[in-house]
Image (tube, rainbow, N blue to C red):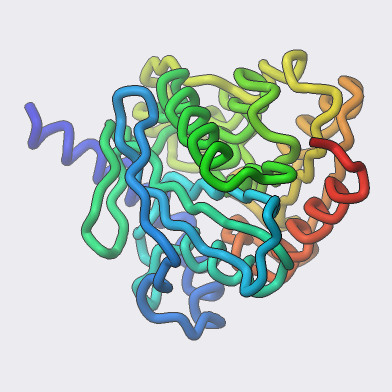
Length: 295
């Protein structure tokens, strides 16, 4: 049974990866990083019953209360990344060079393995949105609380790309006081609509109709704090998580009263996290929180 489940997982992951290959290669060709950038510190933090690898990067100069930025990768970590790198570590490392006074903690999601070969506890799932469960969201929330206790941040920001953005949106709804701000990039924010979209993209592959017990950010909007500062970022040419999903989520948040910025980046596709616009979005979000004086 284990081998059969592994084969199903691989088929699902590579079916999605086939859609992403052109944009992955284009994005990677602009990167000079080969291998994971060295972290200032590697922590194994307990997210409920799961131990999650967390790689910590720091700005050159830190105050006693820096901004804490927590980063979640997408569902296809490690698939077709050229050169080999764990891309949310690259984002975390670069963010500390572009944004002043931040600690950036890149979390390896439950069940995933990075390029070092190390793996967080838990079940990776089939890369069909099935990994966005209450248990996963609670595990990430627990890790965030431990990081806050360790670094005494002035503000806490959660950044998620793709599936990590969906988990970010879920956390905003499930744990509205856990973070002050969030950046959701390439978000499949309406899980039901996204799974139908992916099923159409893959010639009605039945794996997308398999029942799951995952959370959808769109259905949790009413529970998001009105004080939250949220940036929703999507590429205009994203055919994996189309811009309409990000637009609908941002509009629903605005009705809720949250501080929301929606950016649709021209000429960009799904793999957007290492593009300049993502770092600019993060810097703008951090500055917005600092101006607000919110603690």
